[in-house]
Length: 91
Image (cartoon, rainbow, N blue to C red; front, side, top):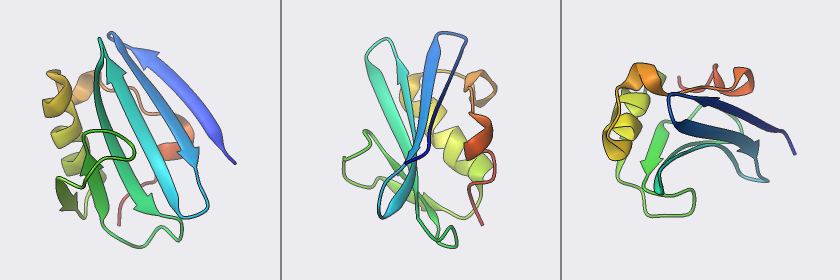
């Protein structure tokens, strides 16, 4: 299992891989958001309020998924730290 973290601008990001998904989870002052993609890496990105929460929206592009995650956290997308291992998520 791959596991990486990054912190910036009061936001903590954790990237990890499960048996079925790649997950990028964000936390800011107790508010959370997650971006997930199937393990094969070819499907749309799913944005959720938590890593195991219900899907809110799907996106082809990583930038759009990060925009939505940032909105859930109340920050600018540019404030989100992205661990290097997660930088290639999206289609």
